[in-house]
Length: 90
Image (cartoon, rainbow, N blue to C red; front, side, top):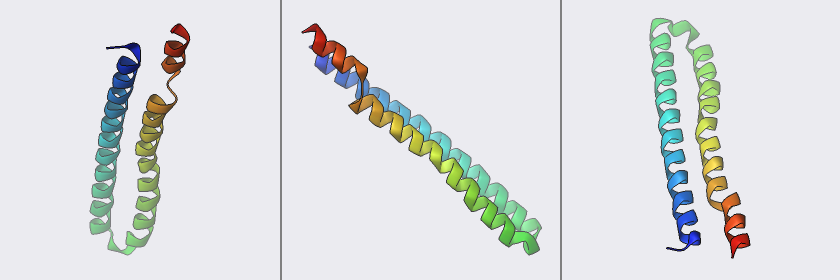
């Protein structure tokens, strides 16, 4: 294997791990937040509107975790500084 193939394989592997962990963490956080909000709505039905709006804002903030993981995965694949190093060595 030449250095380009190794750098490409490690970049893709790192991006896959990053997206897997980032998506898993985001999904677990969103599930816990939704479960807690539904429990609160069941206990206090008169405050369901306020709880629901707060839940949607919280879910939007939790979703940014997965988007940041996607950004880091794209950076690992397309803006990898080791590509420049491999090109300079040849």
